Structure formats: C-alpha cells, structure tokens
Length: 361
Image 1 (cartoon, helix red, strand yellow):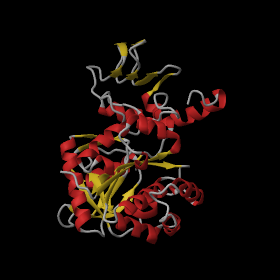
Image 2 (image 1 turned 30 degrees about the vertical axis):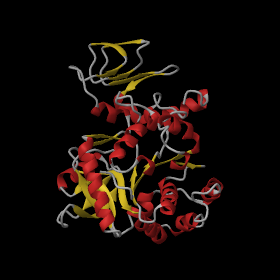
Image 3 (image 1 turned 180 degrees about the vertical axis):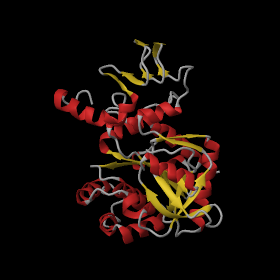
Image 4 (image 1 turned 90 degrees about the vertical axis):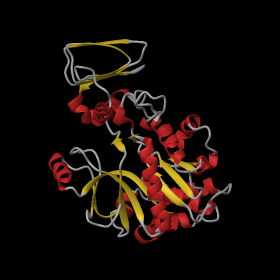
C-alpha cells in the first residue's frame, strides 16, 4: 500500500550523448530510450517502478528544460507541476534542492526518495519492499539520511561504492565512506572485504533532514533556494528558478553533502540491480546466443563471437569472422568498433563534432 506522505524525485541527470552514441543523441539521450526491448524507456520504467511506493501525483521529474517535451510525451499523466525544469545544468545538488523546497511547500512532513534513471531493476516486488522499508525508517527517524546499497558480486569498476560498518545493528548500517569508480585492483579488494556495497544512488530521507544537511554543508545552495519560499507553487516559480540557477555553482549531492555528513546510513537491497553506463554494461545484461553474441534487429552472424549488434528491422546486418565488436546501425550513422575500445567514444564524438558539426551527435 502506498503512502501519501512519500514523494519520489526522479533526477534525469547527465544527458551526455556519447555514452550510447549513436543510439543515444543530444535530442534523445539514454534516459528516454528503450534499452531492454520492453517498450519502456529508462525514464518510463523508473516512473512505473515507483507507482508501488507512492501515488502518481507524488512523483516528480527534474530535467533540463530542453527535454520537457520528451518527458510529457513519455509520461503524459504528469501535470506541469510535477516536471521541474532546470534552465541550465548545475549537477545534482541544485536540482534536488529545488525539488525538496517545492515538495516541502506542499507537504512539510514529506519523506523523499531521490532516484536516478540510468539503472535496471529486476525483481520489482523485492525492490518495492526494500524501498518501502527505507521510507518507514526515514519516517520514524527523521534525522537519518539513507542510501540503498547492493551487495557486490563482481569487481565492477564503473560503479560507485559505499563502505559501511559491518557490525552496526540491524538492517541499517552506518556509512563509513563513498568511493567513485575504483580501478580493477581496488574493486577486487572492495569485493573481498565484505563491508562494501554498490551505490544505487537511491536516497531516502525526511525532507527536513535533507534541507538541514544543505544548510550545514552547502549553505550557498541552501540560501539561494530558501529565498524562493514565496514563489514555489505559484506562477512566479519559473522566473525565480531562472534567477536561482544563474547563481548556482555545479556541485553534486554526493560530494557536497553525503561525503561530509555524519548521519548517513545504508540499507542493503535484496533486489537484482545493474547500472546502465556503457554499451558493455548493456552487453553484460543481455541474453547471449551460443557464440556469446548479443543481437537486436535484422542480423546474421557467421564465425563471429562476443559481439554486440544493434540495428533495425529495415536493414539486414551481416557479420563475418568478427570477435568482440560493437556494431550499431541507425538512420544516419553506422558505428563499428572493438568493444574493448568503447571508452574512446567520448573522444570520437568530439572529433566528429569538429569534422562534421553537431548533426550526427
């Protein structure tokens, strides 16, 4: 059963097109794309997942104003009040501060769940159970800032990690440290230590607990958004937000608050979770054929293995004698590159901009 005092903030976040280029583009980045062939974009899947946590009218999306049409197209049930438009990108701290102040104006006793869109959750019954548990904890102990962690099962270099006090009581664990995307050797140490978890970037807390943390650790951001108390939920809100963002520096919630605060706790989720951050992360998630290939579209593969091929039904893609390649075919771009060189795509797209302009990005 959903709780009326629970609110979800879906932070669309980084819309860089290079992560899944050329499938992901500036005009339609990864958050708005269907990666698993379910008929749902990452944004829509996230929204539907949280309908088991709170009423639909309590779900907010924070997104760059450039993508407002895509949000309304994919989530037409959202009212304009539920789509918080950022005039410029300033990382996560300003966007979450904006959402918190707007929600507090509506409900001073709100418990807020902050979630990204770029991950996959399998076993949604377990997911809803665990997030509800976190909401209950945050409601009963309004001083705690909670993060949901996942027990790692491999030394993943592209995830963020949480170190926690293993022996701290019950399901709630005191957080020691946060670590950004470690190198392979360090990731293996984290895996073997037994007191590290993957950071899902799902945070749960009472709205006042988070705003108190802003005042203590990010006072400049806190002051900017507190000045808007008389504007939230009024016709003047958009004008105020334009002014507020012009004064904000780019800072993340993780580095600005969570890495400094002393009241950070973690609960371990028992659902299947994976981050979607690269073509290779998608390859790991997808079902493979007998030669360990992942294919989507109209494809024929001969003497090829460990390849990821993504196309459309309209064009036949034939691979012969390739191993470990990424092949992505779109209407105007065909990409062919070794999968192990995928991290070069960012430099590649920069070079394409120099040579061909922005039309292919």
